[in-house]
Amino acid sequence: MVKQADVSPELNETAAQTGEPVPGLPARRLAATLIDEVLKARLALDETYERLAPTFGLDAADAALARAIAITAFRRLGTIQHAINARLERGSPRNSGPFEPILVAAAAQILFLDVPDHAAVDLAIRHLHEDARSSRYVSLGNALLRRLARERDAILGEALDPFLDTPEWLAESWIESYGEETAAAIAASHRDEPPLDISVKDDAAGWAEKLDGLLLPTGSVRLRERQSITGLPGFDEGAWWVQDAAAALPVRLLAPKPGERIADLCAAPGGKTAQLAAAGASVTAVDRSGPRLRRLRANLERLGLSAEIVTKDAALWQAEPFDAVLLDAPCSATGTIRRHPDVAWTKTPEDRDKLAALQARLLEAAARLTRPGGRLIYCTCSLEPQEGEQQIAVFLAENPDFKRSPITADEIGGVEGAIDRHGDLRTLPHQLKHDGPRLSGWAGFYACRLIRRETGG
Image (cartoon, rainbow, N blue to C red):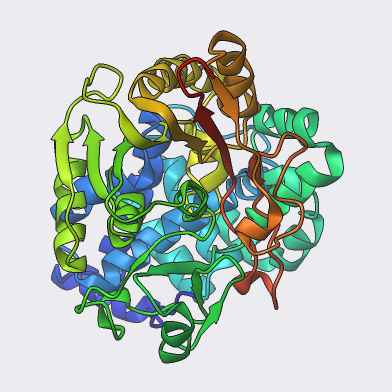
């Protein structure tokens, strides 16, 4: 839970009269701006935050608060919008500037964060006053936010339908793919903060003890408490890196061997590259994004690992065939909604379909880079079959020189329900139950292991 110091109206009034900064207001400005820009431009929250946060000149605590408000707003955006719209007789006013994002940010604090109600309301009203368009609706915003505070228990009591915080197209897709009960469980899991997992170079049990973490059956370590990652034992020494437990599985399924030549396609930011290098493989990491590869390089340097890094579109890159190829293809990322709740509100069915076409091209390129007898892992952090199961069905029909190598439950620690009827990996966000939401679940991932048949085989 976010802790915010009590902001007294009297203090704010004095600050306003003297022209001094109002405590807490800059953080709310950034939060509302993030919400507005992400929804309008359909850009990722993390990228938008990295671009905008430095321009606001906030200290670390205020910047973290702004980000927490925005993440919470997207995590429960359906509930927030429903609560606001139900209490606006004529709907949101037109030509009102930042009225809506300011109210959404304030509602996120009132309904879901540990922020005093009067602080959230007072700062939102001051924010509304700063824009000529929204200032015309200060009285409306004030009345609405105070009503949300009074009726908080009723609002939360009525928000039982987990699909309330899921866009309709996604809910329909999951119901069609997994059935209504499983789809509802997926949607419900997205309302909870995600767990924090790490991958270690070696001695996972030892690091779980040192970090007071939970050793998962898959070999990842789950931290019990949220804390500053950079201050934990082993970070500076490069003993481990942050990586969702489900995202760590594709490399485990590839089973890299020391000295093997392995291509990691669409490699940035490099969690899987690190796994491959830590196993002793000779890794070539390919990605077309220079900035993302700089982050990959920095991660490898901290970890004391090495890989050949190639800045190139993986669909066009050519090289001698590899012993194994890992393709973590660009996708709609709907499997990461619990960690990145903005994904639900920035992606569309059209995005998914465009990405599916790109995935098919990348899969063909990955196939060309796999030697006869070599292994190919195709994976996506998507819950959409169009980006997973359907891709592989088409690929195998068109590439008879490849065959599926079924995955077994013992390869993923015996986790039940994460292997489909074809022997492919299909993790779902509500799986991997432990004590309470904080230690439960993982990302939604799909992975298929393929073998290129030996020549003449």
